[in-house]
Length: 224
Image 1 (cartoon, rainbow, N blue to C red):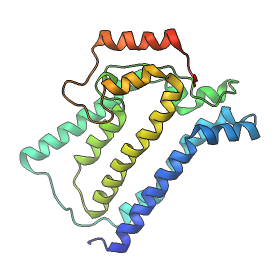
Image 2: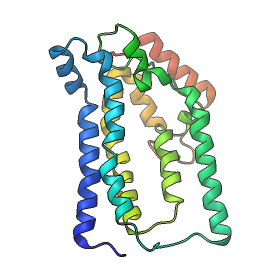
Image 3: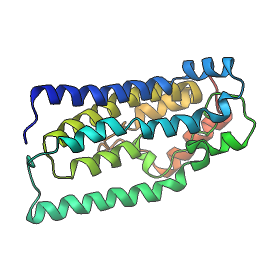
Image 4: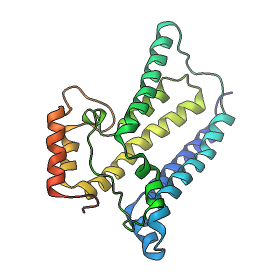
């Protein structure tokens, strides 16, 4: 079936509501407010944030499934082989980059087990191999996965909404990262593109090491 105008609006609002709430919950201001009211909040905030982020995906994903229709386009022949190859490479990229993140910090299990009372993320600035080419490799890899799939109307609207959220959300995220990492991250932003790799804009291994050392020599996690 084809989406009606009302269905398109509802689906956009569902994704927009998810993005707005997700970004709001990630702000330092809300984290600090929670910590000031409940001293135990820093220990559980990240874990609860991730759990809620998964639960809140249910409404837009349900609508996308409920309103799925005839594909707008289908990959065939060589294009199908290329699309699936890119998707596999993106999945491999996700797996390979897991080692470049502090998974316990990212999930919130480290905070849960510890006694840290600071609301700022404690993971230090680390420029991994893929981070030398793009500041948000997971966003890039997710977009490769999304845009190499066959699209019906609901999937296309959702793909556009997710792409827009990655672009807008990364701006808010980087405002917070500047508070954490200061001038070193500003320089990193100037030299490496945000979501899509660009020719000639990347850091060599040596340049990434120098930039990381500059951060360690001038600041620490949570510096504002």
